[in-house]
Image (cartoon, rainbow, N blue to C red; front, side, top):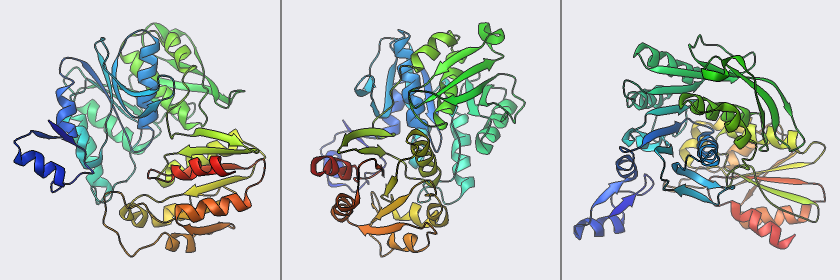
Length: 399
């Protein structure tokens, strides 16, 4: 059997050779869907935050001795793996919208963290993307549950659609941001930074045994966006009828995933961080997290744009996404699955109003520039869904 991802074309030589040899070739969605029928599937989708949220859910259930099966788009730092075949009844999976992969899954519970236009090579318009997510909701059985962020317009729209279909829905939000009249909800209150670099907050809900109580959460992972990811996780726990405070305690032990604000190391007073941010909203969140986590430090944002189509489609948004960085370096575009084009990320740099931004081209030239200009106390955050994490590796070798 050969399983190919959406990034591998039909005319790939290995795919063609497998077909000639009579070896079955499955797209990733078709194969993953076959793993789920005997399990209670929990599928996590959304433009941003789905990897971390999937990892949080998987870790929390694992720490609660439920031994779930899971597949996550990055390595869980706590467990040092990104997939596990558990003996429990639950199957947690990251539901990738690219190429409509998630439509091959068989979930019983779905989470939609947010919905913002992305993958313009696959979804030319926002409505094309929304239509795919609506089809994702249609996968739920009659007794299924949709969980969504009440602060996000796209997620709210999907929650309303699910309610009209007669499905169970749960919404979550930060205090003061509840903008949907949901019959079941969780809300974070009094969120504030803690000594671990994460956030402490209290959770109230109208669901189950915890409806009259307050659940305390203390996260290690930085960024207010992770409060929302934790709320999504607790919403899943509530949907399963499991104790929220036990889940909250497990979330306090969660240490993140690979390339999601991953501190790669520190040398000569310089801290190097890898982050997978490749969309303007994700870049803003990562840099806001860095600024809050490392106050009074000079922050270098090293951005490797991912795909020509995304960089061109979100040109203006990218050009305005780096306000929380003190210094910005931009490499050439990582083409990924796309053919090379004449368009260059230097054009985005020329449109940036940031007072200290530089186009550095190759990864090697970017590393060399950093080595010449970094000083003790600096924070370098490499923003890349491509191969620019090599910059982090090289910096820590050569500093």
